[in-house]
Image 1 (cartoon, each protein chain N blue to C red):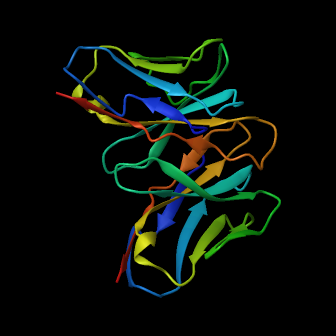
Image 2 (cartoon, rainbow over the protein chains, first blue to last red):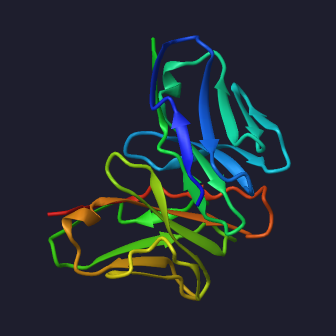
Length: 111
Length: 116
């Protein structure tokens, strides 16, 4: 059974800092891995998707890496801004198409 | 609006009533997934459907919960005889294809269900 863990559970940083969010999973037989952003009371916004054959994906100030063999992914956010404050969710896709989510990292970027 | 549409956004029911949650997938998407987010917990998979077929319902509670995705119209998640523990945010996602690993699931804004 796939289990996904995200560390830290919460993170507070001053504006402008570079930061790393961590995600680990127990079963390396994954299809893909997605990082999402969730704002309070809102739905999920897909940030990046990494296929199982890929090592990283980049979009703007975001970079996500994937190491299947060690069961780890990281989301790197450069030059953080107050608008980046949200909960960041890591989700692992299996061949059955279901996503298994971590419990998220709640990020606060202080002006 | 090309996104996944869920309605209602908020639903209040008394214990014992029925709740019906609706999800219209993105245009061109034929796969629908339902997830539940209990208070202070992560999202948990419930069910995966294609048109007129339930593909994987291993995350659905065995009683009171059912889901359908008819040939015409939205997908429906139905909860009978609701209890306080059903209070949660229910999210729907859709995707165009099972086969390719580069297809993300696109999520709706969710339905917040509150049981009085």
